[in-house]
Image 1: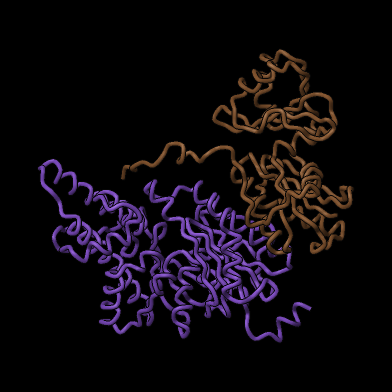
Image 2: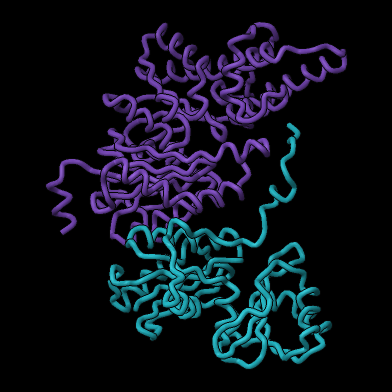
Length: 233
Length: 353
């Protein structure tokens, strides 16, 4: 089974190829260039390097949200274009589940947090038994509120994601439980995690037609929140 | 293998994709002129609620609809991706988030199937809609491009060779239509609504100013005209007088049309052009067409314009513009990015022939 993994939901752009349980290639960058300029050239590089025949892949697993609206859509449109051109299905992997999967097998709770601006984070809480289980479904939430929810559990927790550098001090000042922050090589989105978890979902029959895929933003657009209005000329 | 096939093949088929604003569109075009399909999913009803295009809503809708639009376009054209020689995609100017959906999708299809990619300028697409409508049209000609986001006078010296003769210094013509339509209570989109109601109004009822730009006989300015309409409406309200929607619309429209025609004909005379074209959403305006028909007729200039479906944002026009770039060897790479402020004539790809 061959799965291509894609994650461009945040600052990181990441692509990976998973072939019969082996990650034959992963290419991840966390740099200034836009995902639009990096994502597909990165995929081409690892495809060439591993001599992958694109027609032989079984599915495309993509981080399906939440995340940066534009970043998500670059990943989604790339996945949809590949799926349409190759006549293969898409496997949607929620971004926060993909992040949590970086820490597969830990006995602690895992809390990925992504900076969602406007004083919110996208966060969820997960555990492994040994498979990924959702404790708190991914949501857009205040950092204080998610730490408060974790205080109710009182369990040891590992935080990761690009929300950590932004909210580290608030976590440190409010957490009433043992916590750790994931190290650099596990702290951010990884397409290998998306592909590996995507392969599990694919085996479980969760693949969909590319046409049906759109990102899950967890938030309405600002205009929809404010509602229809009459613009001043 | 691909090259040999290309050499012996007579017809070149392009799949074109356009998502620069609030229309998700795809088309299949043969040799830049013959349209096999022209699929447009318009989001206008969604944006009408907000009085104009909301970029984030537009982008969200594009990603939901793009696959269906491409599939429908291929199926109506009776072909599959295997029959496609190149993919043309709009990469600017426009809303960056909206453009990125079409660009990323087009790049992925091109990469997965090894189909050459051609990035196309949206306005060059609008101009090229005239090639579809008039199969005998060839450069050189001059074209007025007027839409919600653009007002340019462009000299088309050759295929893919554009020279900007004049531009607006402030509002685009279509933008002025939208703003005035909102002010007189017609709502969005302003162009077709003003066009329609003007038929019942007196275009000489109110003498709105014809905008002049200091230091240029050719550039456009529409913000003064817009303010003048608003002042007129305020004046009516202060005096407790009712105003006639139809008269304001007709008088405003005449002021816009007069300026567009006058500057265009002035530029056409300076360059001695024999053919004059119009393009863009405002080119569907019936009064504008009539005025150009008359002005060009008086001067012995051939006047051409696309039918309304090719004036609105569509992908067939992108296929037409992309074809002429493709046969010149122009190719875009996997790193093609959306360029929201792309200038006419600006290229990010390379010529490989």
